[in-house]
Image (cartoon, rainbow, N blue to C red):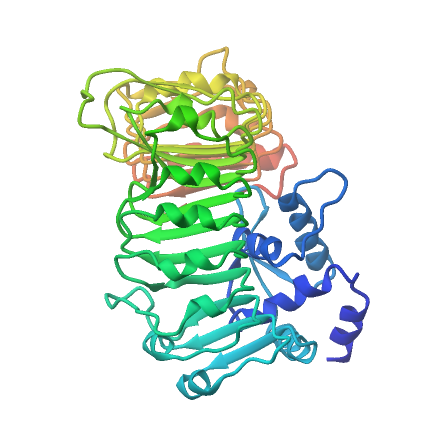
Amino acid sequence: MDIIKLSYRNLPDYLKPSFLYFGAFPVGQEIPFGKLMRLWIAEGFVQLSDGKSLEDVAGDYINDLIGRSLVMISKERSLGGIKACCVHDLLHEFCVVTAKKEKFLSLVSGYDELLTFNGQCNQQWLCVYSLQEHFERSRIFCPSVRSILFFPLDNAYGPKHCRLLFNLCIFKLLNVLNLEQIRLGFCFPSETLLLVELRYLAAQGEFDSIPSSISNLSNLETLLVKSHSTAVLPDTIWNMQKLRHLHGGFSLLGSSLATENLEMSSVLHNLETFSVLSLSSGQSIEKILRKLPNIRRLKCTLFESGKSTGDCNRTVAVQFLSRLQSLHLSSSFGRVKYHSELHFPSNLRKLSLSYLHSSIIPELRDLPNLEVLKLLSIHCEENTWDMEEEWELPKLRFLKLGSLDIVRWTSTSDHFPCLEKLVLQECRKLEEIPSCLEVIEHLGMIEVRDCPVLDRSLLLKIEEEQNSSGNYDFKIFIFQ
């Protein structure tokens, strides 16, 4: 413990609250970095510097803590970035003890503590570990608290709805309210709409819509709505100029945007991430997306309106989104058989396409900065995917093909000279893959899952050639 204390004392002052915040989560819990980053920002830990965005600075913070061996990466992204992180149990204990000592943290666990807890006047973070039914009946009174985070000890996703009996309105200074692991029923909790200091709000329920008074939360930066039905966001959402991250979960169609007054609506200049945005073929997709000029990460679901027909062309143009780095686009009605036309910005780095028609594939050849590409459940009319000569993805490092109907895939090493990892998953008809994989210099791994007719001799030859050229770290993993 003395070594941990020394490491903590050597931390810059701006990093200490970020590190202690790990004590707010249950011991051993894997924390998605995106969530942790947004919480850090809402808590005010992240400081702007050198013209970087708050999200980029938060990335520097976590890398610094990892470099000091205080935080561990528990799950990596496709190219080795941080997807989730955690701390060792001893470090977690230190965070809890120190955060309590420095008047940052109160942990309330169990029904008895919930009934009797009265926070100190300088309390900042209140973390509740309890059964959902006990939390529902609690009478928490701690008006000076800045953050409330709830972690269930039971199955929070069960059928029972939770009805909060304590008065949320007393928490007038609240910046963070995380209730995403409680099912709050069919009505969005109206009490939260009076907490005008909120910067981070996460809630779960069966919400069909979000009240228009959500715009009262003018300081809100992150809104996370896990709705088990299609949640329609009101047109007042366009007035929330500080909004940076908008996430709708669970529902197949994600969150829909009200577009009745779109022409008169404000532009959300600060919005950086939106997941999941539902777009109807009957809507003006371009007009909606032009309201999000600085979006960096976008996840969209396309669905059919009642007026659309199954054989018409679909066009999705996002080439004007100059800051877009990551795009996930899918159809809500399974593998579509009609032609689609997509136009992407040249700066795109990550692209995932699901349940679309293979007519979109030629549009991918003009993406010089693309590093990650996932093609999943794409409807292919031909048995062979032949990458034409003009194809070139010079920076592509990760390629995943999932549930494709192709039998053969042909290409040359010029198409993706920097490829590092290839994943083939549930391509049940695939027999042949490109021989050029033998000579791609940076290729480190091929992962094959549930591709029963793929010629294993081709894989062995690729491995032999890679090893013979000095690439002894090259690996092939086959899972049935």
